[in-house]
Image 1 (cartoon, one colour):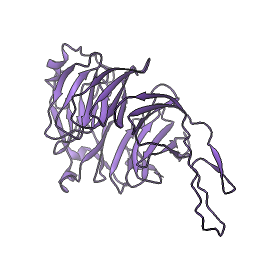
Image 2: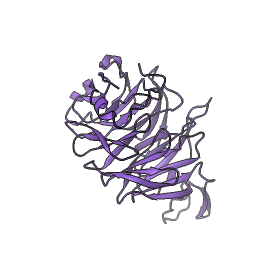
Image 3: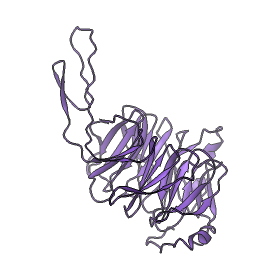
Image 4: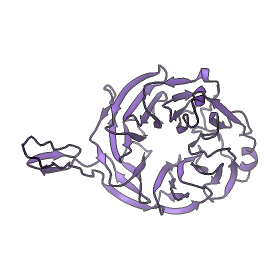
Length: 367
């Protein structure tokens, strides 16, 4: 089982030799035989304890694995989505509650112990991303048309969707600050910037369209005989506090180190930039990837960082404080989705290779 107490961090000088002892375990999903590319894993996420890991695939397979038991008979398949699973995320304060968004236009919440779908929230468009506030009070879903949907989690009431928040630019990922109740929200933007916004949004904006008073997110519907189209009321409700001009092209992925000291930003320019959150200055840039950085992840102690791309093979492990490459993981195919174990192990889960999910370290090793 995964450790309940953090182990000691491995220093940079010892890391390469110890990391090289880790062995990879494959988690074979029989769904991968449906056809070439049909079972492509699009998203990976560990639960808060590191005892479970969820994968979502293009063929709408949503599966929960026990990393200690790689046989599919020991996994749990959650059924209900009718489109590709685009993103999964665990409630940070409930180890058995999972959220998933799909191209079928829904966000679903699951109790993985019972395989029950707790709620299915219509998003009004194809889902793309999902992220939780650190206290579990809120999940923020994003659509492919760059509209954000806050979903509020009441202690005694079912999840409830709030007012949609349309964004002016491509928005690939959202990330709440990890301390206490949500107060700031980070957004990756299609112009190469990361916006840091206050949360919650200010009260809904209002406007008058053809004599109707509208709140943000509402549409004006004409009941007159006029054939003149009635415009849609659309207002940006997020208040920007700061903007990071991080990349020369679209920002795609985000991750905060466990200590919140560094923010890693992955871009379509194949770079990972590391920002110091104390002053929001870029301390170093990592350039070893071949294509767009689809995911970034820090080790449990915040000492090391990795990035996944859908171009090239293999990925490097970089030391955060120096930017030095300390190890490399070879793969036979691109690995766009990857994630470090969250709780005391230097295990890395990744997608891409044939056969499905792989976890480096789950089959043994010296750390």
